[in-house]
Length: 304
Figure 1 (cartoon, rainbow, N blue to C red):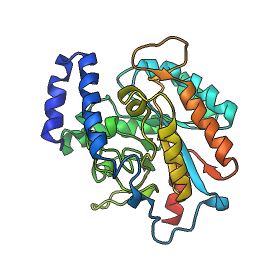
Figure 2: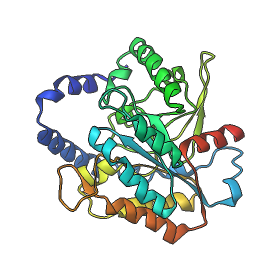
Figure 3: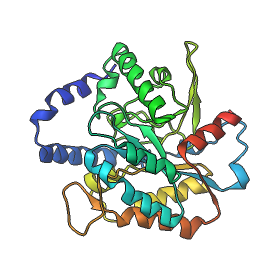
């Protein structure tokens, strides 16, 4: 069940101009960031490895997982630009699509898989309606499961990181990615407090799944709301994760990457993401285990 303040916000959201929404969110983040320095961007307790942790395959120092949530049609049409950027540097990633908010091209999904990328589901609509009630969740879950089967997909991420780990067992998934190690700026800010995956088991006999929390700040938070002009938040957190042997999982939105020279509204220079990928190679070439989310889930399931 959604908290009352979230239900209230979405009931009046359409009445608030987009610019005013962003202004309010920026002011809120400014306040929260000053109050959260002890848990963000680093939560020290999140560094603890799980019991019996054997280490990453091939004795790699840390793991790297790249993911993208495609919130709008603009993001959908930007996907292949990100693919080309990642391919040139030797990376692969997953793209999570919102089923009903824009047409999801069969050809695009086919091209992504053909080129070694992964496709997942990011809800039916980009709002919190999935979590309105358990009845509504089960109703939407039936259709989400149909889409997962149709797309041959095994991964899910909730819109805006809303989550109920028990309810998510109604989905036919190998993994969910709707949580984070620490992020006080999300609507439901309860961090998982770990930079490692973890298994979620159902209390009612349903199939469980592997939870993959994101461990690097979201691009929208850094570059749109906080107006950051460099990638230092990403690189400092990556260095911390690497030093503790965790999983660096990032969520970058094609919707907000500006692949052109203009300054379109609510975008940031795509070169920031490219610089981050180049930093990984420059600092840690040969030291990280880079896999798709589904492969991470399979690995974690095999050891826990």
